[in-house]
Every structure is written in structure tokens, then in C-alpha cells.
Length: 128
Image 1 (cartoon, rainbow, N blue to C red):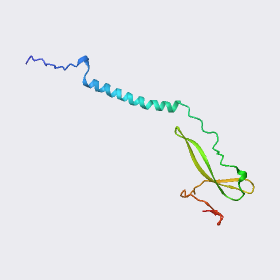
Image 2 (cartoon, helix red, strand yellow):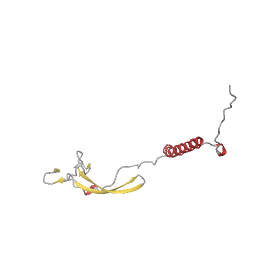
Image 3 (cartoon, rainbow, N blue to C red):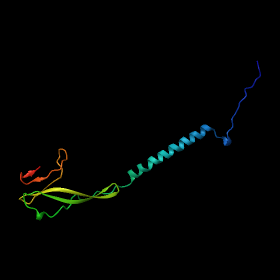
Image 4 (cartoon, rainbow, N blue to C red):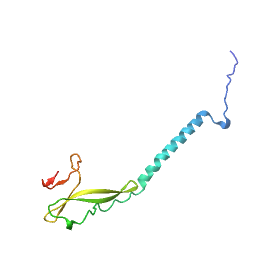
């Protein structure tokens, strides 16, 4: 039998830290930063009360007393809306027909099939 004692070689790091402990701390810190970056917008979304929508979707496009019953008229108007955070003003058109009983029909400027623009053809007495 030999009386040999195993020799332990220790690589001592300054201040008692190892490379593995440094990497673990760096990974935990990076994870904490990512978690915080995700938590702030989530908390803002859940806790901040959204703005109330506009009360009315009606837009004044013109004076209906000037319309001739049975004759379609193309009216132009401006619509203001908020696109994200920036206010936008757009010029839009609408076809308006005043019926003999003073009811008003309004049509969008594009067809519902392929969104083609159409116009009133007086000679055919229909939209084309």
C-alpha cells in the first residue's frame, strides 16, 4: 500500500468568483432585461384606459335641399380621422340620390365586386 495523498489543484479566482458564476449572472441579467422590456408594454396595455371612440360616424357632405329628386349627384367631402397618433384629412366622394319622398340614398364611389369606380350615365339612366 502506498501512502500517497491525492493532490488537489485549485485555480483560485479573485473575489471567489468563477467563470461559470459570471456567465450565469450575465444570463440572468439578460433575461431580466428582456422580461422587463416585455412587461412594460404589457402593463401599459392592460392598465391604461383606451380613448373613447368618436360619438358619431356621420359626416356632413352637403345641403340636401339643393338636390333634385331622382337625379344622382356626386358630392365631395373631407373626412378627418386619427391614423395611429397622427391626424389625417382625406378627400372622399359619395353618390347621393334624393327620392321623391325626401329620403336620401348614399352610395360609396366603388363597386362591391372589384372596387371599380363608377359614374352616372344620364343617357342610359343608370350607373355604369
